Length: 97
Image (cartoon, rainbow, N blue to C red; front, side, top):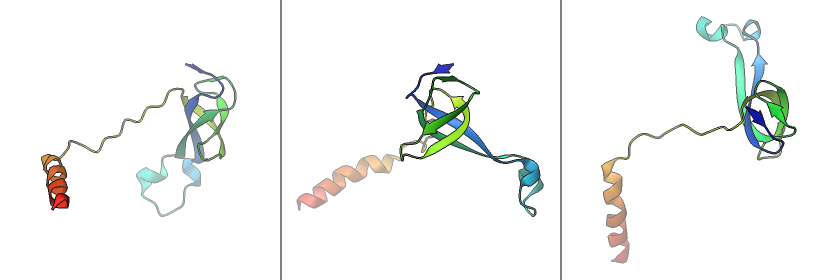
């Protein structure tokens, strides 16, 4: 998917090849490249897989392979604990006293 200059994207950067990982770490970890993913604003029009430069929200410039032209946050904190629904009204009532 093409991405336009200035759009919010995510890049993948290779930090260490598997052969360059520190000795003494578990074998299954040592056999995998050490990568980082960073989101920011694209410097030039590009397509996924291209080597690009981005500027993060903190103003840092980062180079990497364009991984996602429309990144989404897919993490979750799980279901809401029903107790949390009861706490708000109880605290409000307590504060009114």
